[in-house]
Image (cartoon, rainbow, N blue to C red; front, side):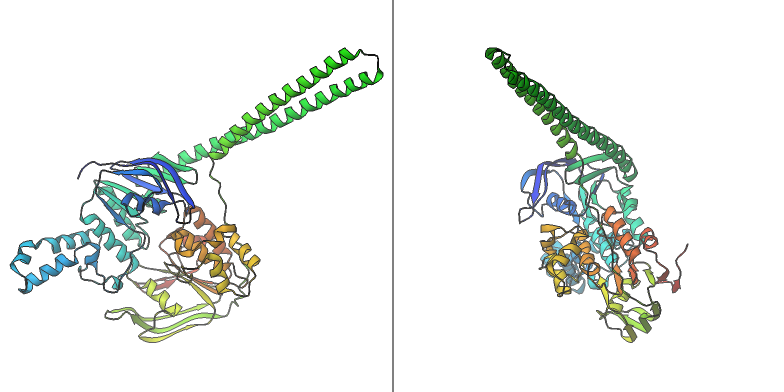
Length: 536
């Protein structure tokens, strides 16, 4: 594996509608582990796609002296796709199968890679996924697909791994597997993530903001410490610059008032008529020259102060915080919202994923569904939401609800955020719609963005805006890994909003801090038959 670098020179990219995401980025990635952080929508995933050659920059250049493999944020699952497709090995494995069956030609046999199957098995074992390469991807959980895709990305031993949220959908053992893989990885890795434990393992952090990009040596803790010092410094510079502008304005005002008083005295002297005209003219000229000189000085001082203020402001990223205030759902405490009785369920052609499960949720209860990847968490959500029919048993939901799956399917990707809101609540006025979206940071033209163009975090926020911003929010929310695509600031705001929500919550999450923040009162741990209050 060569010690290669990736160099970005004055790189810029804009959306097809001309919206500038970033510009003039100068970065170099060395064969080390680099974390990419930043707020939702600043272009983190886009940057990876540009580096991978999957998108074309608006301006600038990328020098790639390296072989690159990329793990995308989501794995698209075709109906006939298998694990072998993630390795690009479907054709080669089919050839081996024909050879073993005695139906291959001599040319096929000569081309066969007889070690391929064992190497794929070894790669899958390396991510704790002992499955056959012929396993359909539709039979895997989101976490299992992530592991398989990671194994496929590493299989060709690239110089650089590009990983977009690699711990999304993974249980804690899976997250530890990813961290261990990156610890042992000998090439370069560029990792977009909001996972603080993973970011702590990085050799460097690159922060993308609306003002550009900055590189920090060390992991997450070192980055946070440096950012705190920098933030204090730029805020002090901004305060000083604002004082200079105010001081320059006061000085200019005082100088103008002094000149006005001198001019007034001169007019009074002239009115007495005891001063020769030639002297009066000279005094008037001097007064005009003095006023002009004072004006030029004040203008220069104000200009310098305002330039310093503009420079200080340019170093501060403007943050528009979420402001989530939710109306009451009106859910009675005694209402049975979900009732499952002896449910058995799974998918066509497979073994049951859920076996003899009974569950009752009452009133504004907050249930966390936990368990390892493949234990049936998303399957249980699909049963409750009605998108999957049980093989046996019954499922009853007694209140209006909204499901937030990984792709926020409740939104139409071809419509704008505002149109999605009005489609769900057609009786709401346009002004009320815009006001609701603004509380979720979709102001003015941002509300007219097409959902399909949004980042993962922006899409989740848009979905929450369309559901929770309604005059009457649903009495139950079903959330499947809601923190996967949110930046840390947005996650904190969502935690605050959900903590204030007075309806029932059913949440799948591997983030204990998130579950604690939203006030989960009960945990159903699939895979070990536990159903109990969460540990204190």
